[in-house]
Image (tube, rainbow, N blue to C red; front, side, top):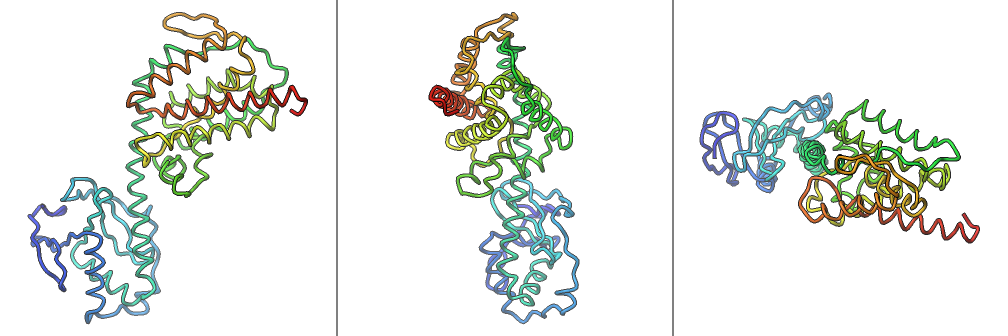
Amino acid sequence: MDCPVCRVPLTKREVEGVLVHFCPGCGGLLCAKETFRQYISALRDSSLQELSTAELFDRKAVPQTRIQPEGKMCPECGEAMAPFNYAYDSNIILDRCSECGLIWADRGEIVKVAQYVKGNPTIDSFGEALAEREVERAKYHRMAEEASEIGGARIRVAGFWVGLLPISDEEETVTIPLVTVLMIIVNIAIFMLFGGSREIIEDFGFIPDYFLEGREIYRLVTAQFLHVGLFHLVANMLFLWIFGDNVEDRLGKISFPVAYLFLGSVAALAHALTTTHPDLPAVGASGAISGVMGCYLVLFPQSRVKAVIGYYIVPVPAFVFLSLWFGVQLIFSLVEAPIAYAAHIGGFVAGLVVALGYRALKKRGKA
């Protein structure tokens, strides 16, 4: 393995009874997480000079966002290494590979960590926990970039949308669809403010692993208002406008947004239970909108939808269009694709159930 700084071949060396990879050129060290702990422990128990009170407590914290990536590549697996502050106010910047976990320390940095830990007995576990958190954030920066690529891939399979694209429906509404309009405005506003930035996707996108571990459940909702590209946004808002206004008209101004968020959450759950990439964030309103389409099929099956089918614009019954759309989702879900088709399917089926339940209650005079 070569040094990620000066490209000199690394050599194995025993320091304080711990075997590490040492760079004879720049003096840096490369070691695994457990070796790092052992090394710090050995140094801490040695005769290192403790940091002064001023050095320990008169520090200015450096947020992770202020730490600039240095472009080091992991000597083991070739992935980019992410710099992180060992403890929030330590100002000791180490590098760690988000893929294999190897830690790189420039000359003298591990000694500084040991001094810091020795002078702060309570900071040891905190420092390691923070390091884990920062490495995790670096990992999801990479995932957010991959999610952006996934969003871009939607354009590459755009034939799915263009070949089966609704333009309008003939079902009139009795009330003004204020909630649908508001949802469209909110989605557009969020996209105009943040675009498909990887930071937003990382912090608010739906990550199946997180959900299945019971962490950051709020992502079920926040992910429904994020989009990775203009095409992603426009396609979703078109479907929401065509089918959402009538479903809102039938369910009401209060029940509709509740049902919308619920259906989006069910769609996310379907994605979480079926995805082969549970560590990647998923974003978009399509799961919730698929649920709205399921409601529309039950509530307005005979309404006519003007749609682009193939190369022609034709009016077709809603149940025909939506059945074709659902069939496409089933077909595409059988192949490896960069779109969460399981979320579409799960949302649509949940929408059918919700609308059937609503209709049953309506017949009994309870809705």
